[in-house]
Image (cartoon, rainbow, N blue to C red):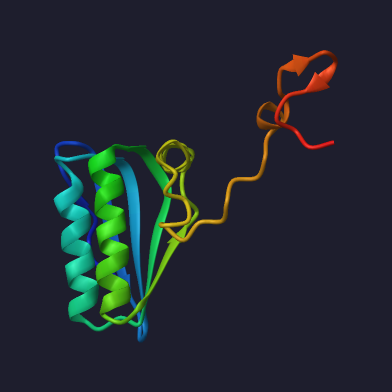
Length: 134
């Protein structure tokens, strides 16, 4: 059963699809303090229908602020306490960047960030990299 996408003035679309045991919440656009209530309402809805697995698809989330990050973390807590399984699928670049900056990847259930070329490099001290094990 799919519900109509709801669009708020802040340009967030929340599309909820409910199956037998699985519910999917698809986020598209910008999620911020003004549009966060749409997501929170979707979470309440899927918990009322007793979904055992809740997938939040964030691949089309173009903007996510700290209020929205807090909303995602609260949603994960509510869903796991329901009890159900929370899965954040395909997080957008914007969400991954915010999760990295706030060090909340693991709290969201995302895999740790792989080292990049920038994080591997270190300043040299007499020809030896500083802070890097030989």
